[in-house]
Image (cartoon, rainbow, N blue to C red; front, side, top):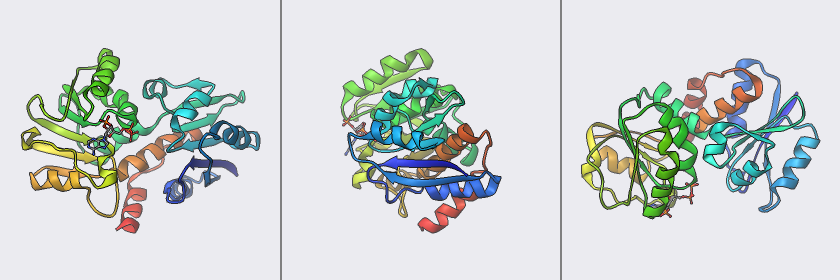
Length: 271
Ligand code: ATR
């Protein structure tokens, strides 16, 4: 069978082996997928050994996505825009293609799983770190009316807006002033990881507002609780996780797995 893995540090709690195992069973693809720990600062050595030993593809998670970006021989457009690589694929000529499937996974979850269309919508994205950068190109491809990036550190939001403005209508702000109300709010800040809530005014919640947290867990995040208490429909990032995995699987195997049953299975085990 063909060998794949996810590498990170820490890696023990990664759900990727379960997800890709389920995709393989579903599609009949003969793959072996494991989780591997690498030491910080040693990604290039790790990857060289993995591919020299016959590895066909690698998923990359925290803290190695920028290392993988530099390691790749060739980049997809969305990986270049993200400045980070979460998927490496060994190509027929032996070279390594770097892709980033995180944003596509988010869009697939929003549009296909949740039915939250983005076209002509006013979107608020909280945070201006790697998670936002990774998602912007696929989000803008859905043609929202506006993507407002609000960040604790205003200059980082401004920087992203300057960089991506050729691809859509964007604006930047801090967490104090917002341009009206929104149809969709995506929390891409790492605040939820620390059990914190980015301080948002109620006025950002538009009619029929939907709120998405890229973080997932057994319990709703403080951001999800905050939004639900204000009548927004809410979702966490588990579907994005499965969605990015499905995009990676497709890049490697040329087959689109079905996401819904795998997501339902994971959700049941998480609860
Ligand atoms: P990631 O790759 O997860 O996006 P990152 O690049 O470290 O990680 O970015 C984290 C993001 O979460 C940043 O936008 C950060 O805001 P700053 O740019 O001002 O640091 C944001 N963030 C982290 N903790 C936060 C909190 N408690 N409240 C609001 N924003 C927070």
